[in-house]
Image (cartoon, rainbow, N blue to C red):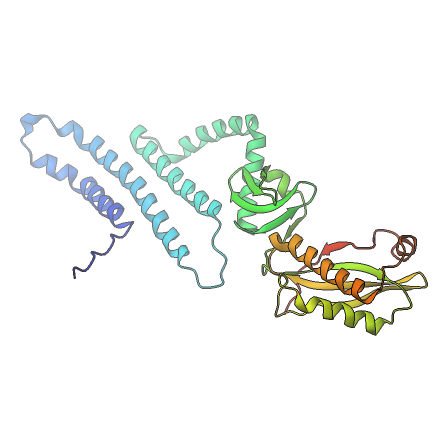
Length: 316
């Protein structure tokens, strides 16, 4: 059986090309000097050397970026990947430096004069596209801080909620539960509060509240709720649900039922199953919920009879 040949190293071809360009820049002048003088090639020595050095700078920038990207890709298990925007920023910096050196060689000027002229041009362009610059800088900040990564379920306050599909220089793209594509400028995201449902783990705890009559003892009500949720299949199995008293009054006792959701896109399924199982257990026992007026009195303010809220993931 023939053994397959190993795949070539991605950066090996670039390294070979860089070596050829460096050798050309170093030995171009001596080699041309060995040629006969009647060929009139002496005037091509310096342009050839400068062109070889400029190309070597670009090849070196590409090689350095490839080596750094390959090294960062070999991360340990559990480590967050390096944001793509940072690698892109590093690539832009390397090629911009190579471009400045190439312009300095071709036009025979020092870097200070080139930087002064380019700075004025960048200032004018920056004022004309200041909104794009703000989005780009915000994208760089998001890439450095990494409040979320691709595949995470996030809620961006007042803007949108969904799964991160792409994190770009200027915009971030989300896909909602209804398969709607949402494109948000990074400058708007950086000014809002971000809730990441996938960090530090994908599973998190949600809860529901319901109000039962006061004639049902608390211990019996808790046992009824927990027994009903033993047959739940959508919630996390190794983290048992909990039931606790949230409000106590003559109109009714409000219980908070806590359970763990495996990941954010399964939250509606978990909520539906939890409420359905509790409802079936209450109906089988013949225990109704507290009247609506009593429930409102017991849960006045920002609480309702059956309100579901997401809690931040508990540590440990």
